[in-house]
Length: 188
Image (cartoon, rainbow, N blue to C red):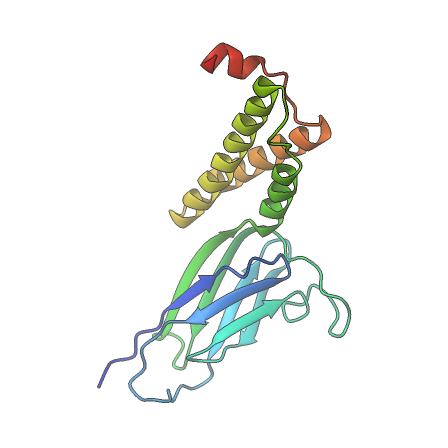
């Protein structure tokens, strides 16, 4: 008979409106007999929310379930940032698993919008290439933020996220934020 081994996996939902958490635990019985399964989610700019958790299932959390919006009203996007999740069953002092993730769905959606506005067939190769270089740099900052959070470097993760967001805002605001010169100087 397997021992109780709690584990959770945050699963991408590819939506700014949902947070997906799968139970990847092993339980001594099937179906699992667990007492008081809960998940604590520390939501950026909101704080700690404690919710019921369904064992052996894929749990979806929204702005309504997390207390960011009113149940029955339209859902709002969940904030980006560091989320700490703690899955617990009784007795809580010995049966829990805790994970932290950097949620980047809102900035990824903004990045995707900027990327889709690129005209890949534009005749001005240097400018288009510069736009790709800028977007690649922004993408690396986003990925760096995720990597830093995965390695418990919270301050670095937030700095990288802020830098990526600032660069992306400038890119969008300035209609690509490029002249083509950087590509010509560095790669031309």
